[in-house]
Length: 165
Image (cartoon, rainbow, N blue to C red; front, top):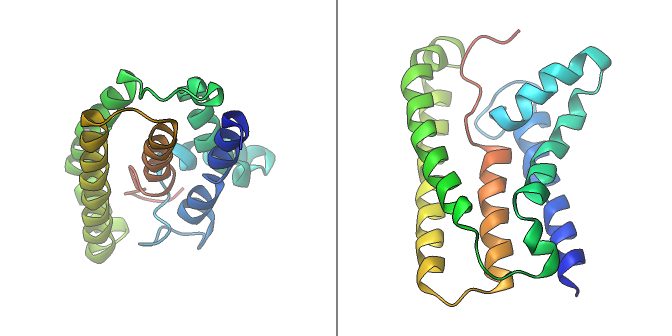
């Protein structure tokens, strides 16, 4: 399969974790934590009754972040490592500052579960990225790493912790 088509299909498959993270239950739950990358666009699009369309945002960001994948680039851009590092730091900061809101509005169980799941996602991402750093680059690895990173951002990263509007 051509790299452009593969990249397009893999990017569109991000609609699945994005839909689970935002649309599955209608309220934040451990399976549907309302991640920031889709919930903010959903709030803006709700005025036009298009909030469900926010699930396309992670796919669009995936395409924009690594356009070289459409050409079959095997090299993982250094900015992806920077994004992972920045997202990790911001995730910790987010949980520190949002923790009490999560406990108050979503409850202890939800807040603890999404924190542990985010920690697990980040641990997996760091292991996979570290292994890729030491290996010969390949298109499949590049595509997989970016899919995994954007799947986390689409489904679980920065879950909604606070009062619902």
